[in-house]
Length: 96
Image (cartoon, rainbow, N blue to C red; front, side, top):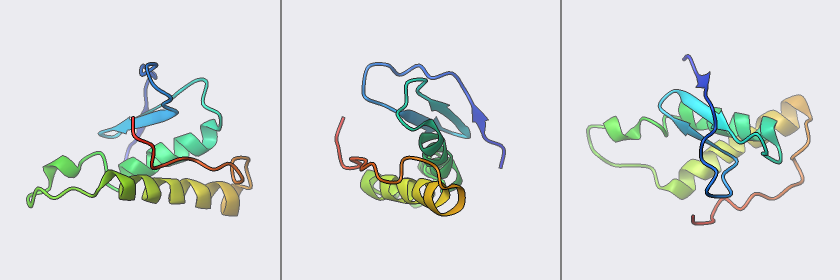
């Protein structure tokens, strides 16, 4: 899968990054840009950005998508790379 990183252009919220299709964007002011990058890549790889094409029209709830992506980022950061961000709680259940 080919994933591209584009320019971040969503400055009206506390958004650290986002994914759309096979593209991701990371806020230049993100607290943990590596974790955010892994999180957004996980959304693409897990199929969260293309679910609208499913024939049965069911969609994974946002809370589950966020838990899945955050889990991938946590595993990559803590287990494999030992990068910062492993002790910071991320409120994945916030609405906004």
